[in-house]
Image (cartoon, rainbow, N blue to C red; front, side):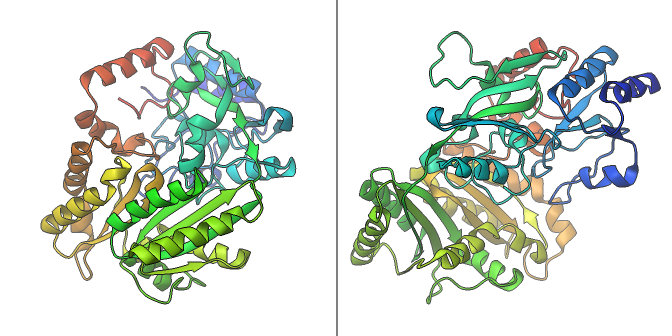
Length: 468
């Protein structure tokens, strides 16, 4: 794809109008890299439309001039899919409206630039719950989490973003607007076009608004931090927790001791959540629509777990401050690694029953390949998603260590594949994993995705650097 011509750039500026674009390098610079600072992109023009009509007008110009375009939300993605390398950058962060909230339908319609936190707050104002939650929710936008099919901490109960979208509005690669903002739970009238757009990383269209599922607000909630000797015990504890609550487990987050040490050492105002220092921690959250039921269920679960030797220590949050303290050490797991020098990042999933086996095998293989490497594993046991991060040995050669990332990742991902897992559980493929995914996707899968893309975007103007 060639660089946009002066005529194309002029047409884009005219289509968006004053205040909807910038060429100022200082204004654009913060949006050309990502949190891990791995990608540093460039663009001749950043568009900041305020309406779906402006997005459509810009895409029509891009289609007419064969100009490539990269859509971006809150720039919280971790695989580089939102970073342009010469393409026009289109930011949806100014599509800010909460269009409606309809409690009787348990639904709300919001525009793509509304942050995840703002969506949660809009639902709460109507005495409803929008359950998707992740560490970057104050910055991540609805358009971005839809385009990457984000997961987060409550997938065990409510599902991933794909499960939470009732309808979509999106600008297609030819500039036409797909208006699919329905509030229906049942619509069996052919292909579900919104599901093609969810998780497509901006390659099939630009999401401009979405109708989202809402849920009743739970009337009781119990949060606990527990200590365990192994990940195997954590998987057994999860099974017991689900049986105890009949589906009331909302979060079940696993953390390795070394990750806790990183948090305590590198994150201000963090504190050890337990008296002991176990090899593994699990943060459990249970909910119920019945007042007091979640607390009672947690007590029963932990009592049984102590009696059977599944856990070695536990603390139940007695107030909101203690609950926030428990969640802080979980949510800061990634940030706490930065002062340690960063490392090889893996966002993988395997069947829940194989999580502990995967952790054992992957860690043994990594330590053989890179003696002294520090493995910090954490994640969402309830849905099989583990963030498996490998940090440089203490005192090691960090540049040389990072240079071995592709080889190290191949070792980890081959083990994931043996367990019929995925090399990208919730972050997407982006620029980081698109080429590697060819090793694990079948030719039929790749050819089918390429055919869909060619049908909708024959000139490949939509985020051309990602997805096969």
